[in-house]
Length: 391
Image (cartoon, rainbow, N blue to C red; front, side, top):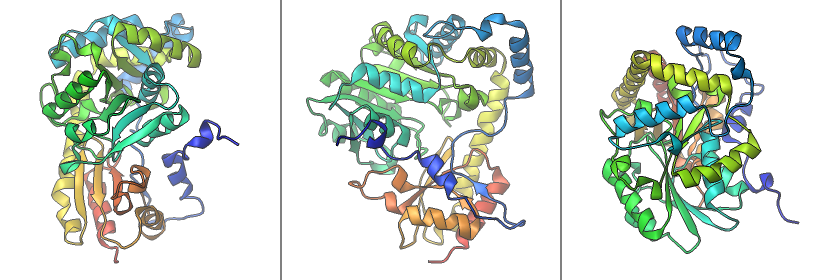
């Protein structure tokens, strides 16, 4: 009997990890530190909540079906801002709004791949990308991590076959946190173009990149849309996770195919969420700059505090955006260690086995720490707890 689409992939990792909490109590002086999920837990800022309330009460169209490819004003705002930020030329017609960035990836793959096709993804990878490829009958071809978790286009070139349809990158990276250099992204763009592939670049965490200026020059190429598909999420920037608002930037021809997918799955993106995202882009630049700085401060706290763990044999493999990706020193696989951490030190994090295929070594000695929801004091507490562990 053949597997169904959903049976062809694994259980959602974040939901699986939450089940490790069942039946476990935590002492009053050692509350749970949940560093498992890369999503803000705070609601949008008060001024955005007020704007959203106004939308709910006084914008009747916010409660109706809208355009399948999204609110025209939001699409135009993204095109304008991206053109300025990336020193390129983007048109509103090259932007579509989706129900979160995961749907943007799903839509892109639906336009690119048929049963048995292949997509190259660097490991460690974002597990939901692999889950969607599995459920689409598409083979994930893992690319072993390069130095500093930066993938190498020359290594990827050796994985291209007649069934390859795309290369998918995430920068700043989930789970590794690393920011891919502009030269790396350009090399992958050139590789994809030579082979007639799509280059998917997921920039969900672009608002928290530590670099100033454009992180790459892909959009400055006048022919960018013959190869590049960029994905984005408003959820992290404006705390709109529950409203599911993302974006896909691609050629007009590609978006005509995307429209078929979106119309069938959700008909239109969340109307209130779209309007909130537009309001945020027009009114919250200073607030978002403060959010970015806070994340950068937490990243610094990770780097500055890590010597405490390094002295115990831990290694910091990558750090940036919402994530620290670490190597543990213990002689047990990371999936077992992660379960033990819940009971022994009240820490919930995800093991590297959730981000690495069995055929590439490393996952069993790695953990992902999502630090977006713990401040500097929480990071100090986390490191103290981890340092207390003995082999």
